[in-house]
Image 1 (cartoon, one colour):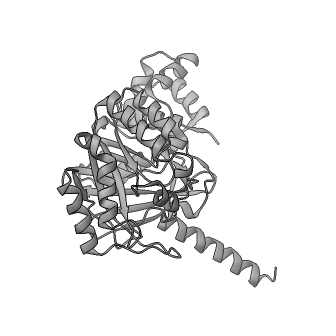
Image 2: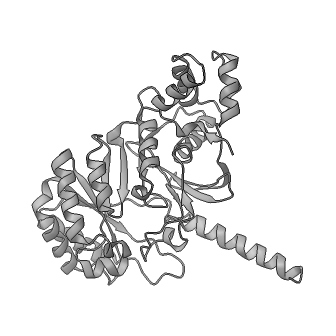
Image 3: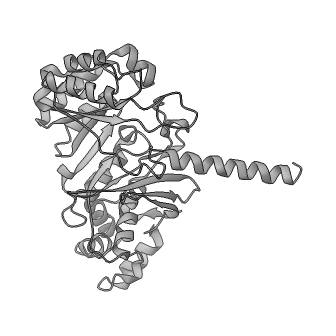
Length: 363
């Protein structure tokens, strides 16, 4: 399989073309065709010389993802199921906000973090996505928007899909550099958010990158006992290791961090936990924001959505303690809303189909 051209940063593309006998300025031409004019065929790069097109076609491909399913919600949310070149499938989601169009991208095929409430973690990690496969999710959505001829563009990105971004760190950073590049898609760093479940060493590394990209931490519980119960990563990086990493990030970047907190009925949604969370964040409240997330039930999962009263009480407790917070606006509740749900359903359907085929053949 040829490498995705979307996996190269501008500097990497420039170096590669020069190494293959092309002039340095060719990279700017190719880059503009890919990300501004958004062609899907090297032959459509009209002002690029034929020798450059030939060497690109010999070594790279523009499209490695194919659309398998597209679900559109009444609220405008679109969930895509893409098939990769090796047959694996991933999810990508387009969400509409009053400030623009945001795309949630996937970074891994499956996930090894194993959060007990999450549909993504039901299926173990198969492999990392390449930087090109992550970037192509944005391009696929943008091509879809271009086809509707409404002049819409992806303006925001959240790296919150299937997988743990910091477990695929190098490819993640390449992706961020590509989509943020002003010569291409030019999606502002402050319009991009990366979410981690708390791989502490990578949080230090991310702080040292010197980029303005937002960081979100999936905390989901205010004490080690409860967090370990629902997030097994807490065994490796308990709060005693995680909070110093957060402090380092805040000191190094002086940027606000978002704490994601999914509310599970009668598990972590009591006023007691709200006070514990406030205590945990009190010394950093000026650079903290808590995003309270109503739970989307997952099949064969014991958790339930918190009652509206419990959500309100949790929210009000944090606000009374001086912790800024909000309740996440829900998108696509009518189309397999939970991250990983559509992928899990499709994989189960395929297993059932293959099983039925074997039984019919008498195998």
